Each structure stands twice: as C-alpha cells, then as structure tokens.
Amino acid sequence: DVANSNSAIKFDSDSDAAAGAVKYQRMNATFVTLARNKELFELVKSIREVEDRFNRKYNYDWVFLNDEEFTQEFKDLTSAIVSGKTKYGLIPKEHWSYPDHIDLQKAEETRKNMKLAKIIYGDSESYRHMCRFESGFFFRHKLLEDYEWYWRVEPDIKIYCDLDYDLFKFMADNNKVYGFTISIHEFQKTIPTLWQTTKDFIKQNPQFLAANNFMDFISDDGGDTYNLCHFWSNFEIANLNFWRSEAYTKYFEHLDKTGGFFYERWGDAPIHSIAASLFLPKDKIHYFEDVGYRHQVYGQCPLNPEFRYKHRCHCKPADDFTFRGYSCGKKYFEKMGLTKPKEWEDYQ
Ligand code: GDP
Ligand code: MN
Image (cartoon, rainbow, N blue to C red; front, top):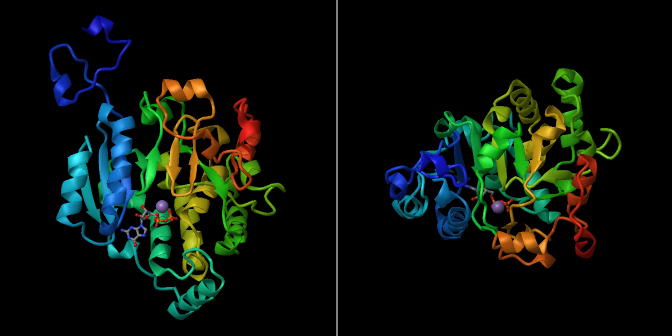
C-alpha cells in the first residue's frame, strides 16, 4: 500500500497495475541505438543485458536509428525484447552524406593514405559518416526531438551488475549533464588537427569556455596540447539539451567546416569529450563507477568484492581497464579529486 511504498518503488508495468501500486514517474528519457541490420544478433545480446540488469524494472523507450530502412526481422526481434516502446527511424540523407564544401578527391586520398598507415577504420567512408552523425546530428533526429535524456547502447556491449536505481533520475537529481563509464586515449593519427581547430574556436568564442571546466583532464599543459583522453562514447548517459546548446551547435559547425571528419578521421568520442570538458563545469560530468560494462576489448568491473556480490556482477576484476596504462581512469580520479578504490594498485 501507499504507506509502505517508500521502501520499494512500484512500477507501472502491466503486472503491477494491481490495486495499490504507485505509478513510477519515468524521466523524459530513452535508449538510443544506431545500428545496421546485419548487427541485429550482436545488438540483441546488448539489449538483453540492459533489460535484465536495468530496464525491465523501468520500461524506458528505445529509439533505433539507421541510414537504411530497418528490416521487419530487426523490428520484430528488438520489439520483442525491449520492455518499453520501440521506435525506428531512418536518418535523413543530409545527416549522412558529404557537405557541399568537401573535396571528394581529397577525402579519397586521405582514406588511401590511412589504409597504408594501417589506421583503424582509416579507409572507411561509412565510419566517417557515422562519426559525423554521432557528433552533430543524432540529437536532432525527429524521434529524439521530444526527449531530454538518452542512454546510448551499441551492439556487442555487456552490463555486468544489477542497476538498482534509475540512472536517468540520478543524472537529473544530481545536476549532471554527461555520464560515462570508460575513458581512454585516442589515436593521434585520426585527429591531427582537431585540437588546433578547437583552440581556434575557443579563441573566437571565449564565452563558451565554462568556469571550472575540466581542461585538466584533456590537457596536461593548460590547454596547449591535447593529451588524447576521452570518454568512450559507445556508452553515454547524457542530456540532449547539451548537444542542442548554442556552444555545441557552433562548435560542431566550426569543426564540420574544416572537413576534418573526412580529411582526417575525427571520432565522435573525442569531440563529445572535448565539448563536455570545456563547455561544462566539471561537476556536471559523472563517472558511472558502478556500471560494470564492456565493449569489445575494454571493460570495467567494480574492484570491490562486496559491491560485486551485492550487485550480482558477473565480470572478472582482473579484466578491469580503469587503471591500466592506456586508460585515462587514473587521471580522471586525480583531476576530479575522487578517491580511487582501495584495490586499484593491484589492477594497474
Ligand atoms: P567502434 O565502436 O568505434 O568500433 O565502431 P562501431 O562499428 O561499433 O560503430 C559505432 C556505432 O555506429 C555502432 O552502434 C554501430 O552499430 C553503428 N554504425 C557503424 N557504422 C554504421 C553504418 O554504416 N550504418 C549504421 N546504420 N550504423 C553504423
Ligand atoms: Mn562499437
């Protein structure tokens, strides 16, 4: 009954519609996944884990986006697994194609050279459209227009621990804007001019640089050079209004004009991270230490055994990437003024 409901949140799924259940007020939030039809079976594994560990209790919506039409099979299977409403959107051509000012020959030259240099995805055209879309357009898609918060999910991710609270509500209640799990160094060769381009932007628009920003995390010399640290964007829980802000809109336009998405191979992860670190006060960035997570080769696993048992985590602490050399986790804890878990020294 209502008098006892403060100890356990009641949810408005069909089974809880029984008399007395208090309707849970969801946030204005959705999951969002960009994917290709051929990734369906890798993707449903991700969705299954997100549902089991979190969303079966909350039933948030899930928006799927694609530069091609989704197949009926894709829609049927994902709809069968997602507990909330599912929505399927086609990306408009102008969000997934070359802007007029791009010299296609120069872009092709770049891809050839990057292939020879064995730069990951260096020869891929679609990867560049993907990175540009995730940098500048996903939050403008019609299906996302009415939402305030999103949680990005990719094929081939794992969620290792029970999530017993509403992560969207946590973000809102704690005045957070950008949330992440893993931080890592970028390959310098994919972004040779990104930092100079960013510095030019800040010089022309100093008003967008936040007081108490997180420059210390992304630069070791007060902003002169970029140290390549970024939040890994395959997991993000963030406020869409940040990407819709004047600062970010103008920043993206400035970046896009230089052609760096095509003449180099700029990723959405360093771009999102640089923007969050410069345009937000650092206390609006949140590290989800408690979200056991993996994508492909890197993961995080809470190191504290009691925490893992209580949240029924199924990850191996020795696989935790947070304090390894190539990670930026150690720097994050230090620059954010956080205390590292007491086990960290055994997992460097
Ligand atoms: P990585 O994580 O950097 O290795 O890149 P991914 O291949 O995982 O791509 C990032 C995200 O974009 C994933 O959710 C992919 O499913 C999606 N994606 C990548 N390329 C394409 C594409 O050409 N079309 C569509 N629709 N989605 C793509
Ligand atoms: Mn991926």
